[in-house]
Length: 173
Length: 81
Image 1 (cartoon, rainbow over the protein chains, first blue to last red):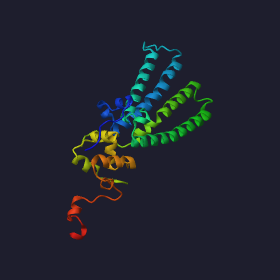
Image 2: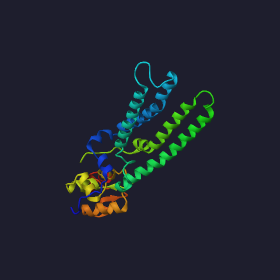
Image 3: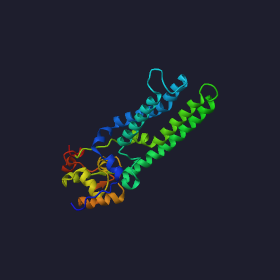
Image 4: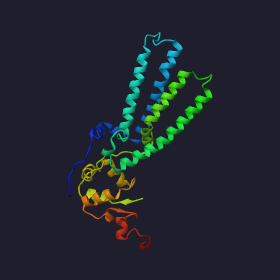
């Protein structure tokens, strides 16, 4: 066989090519991580300020600092976001120059559908704001839901890819 | 859909997916996608694969399903039963 080995691989491409990420690249694992990431983002946007509003302070009576809960949720969000990206082989993180033609095709499709989904989510948020802002939902709740929606929109391509790309195979057969 | 004989020629040359991927400068997953027919290659990639494996593009990819070995031997054709 002719040819010379030598794939151009940047730092991120090498990082996401690590064998420890293989177990997260099944269809089931990717979808679980997608749901977990969305839940952690919304928890981060909802729980801390909800508790703070009820207690009126940033320190819970039980001795557990609310800031600790916030930090724990933040850590969970960062962790699930990282694993979600690893589960799709880092397609949304690796620079385009380090992706091959099929990876670029997958990524572009993910971005296209994420753009549509984010637009619908933003529209839904605007309608909810104008419909319920006066009365049932307080301003901080709205701002937190808006923040969480923003975070999900930022990560939407990864979620679309997690639910759509075929399973990644690592066998050498 | 494009049908592929990539697996046949790759294994015949004793190459793993990763080795073939390195030779044509793509991700190993891409080789798997091409072998399963999930995605079709660009002209450039098809030419690179054919060059590396030493066969024509037509031998590697086809718009029609490749005949099976049984078909080629005539034992699986409906008319021959």
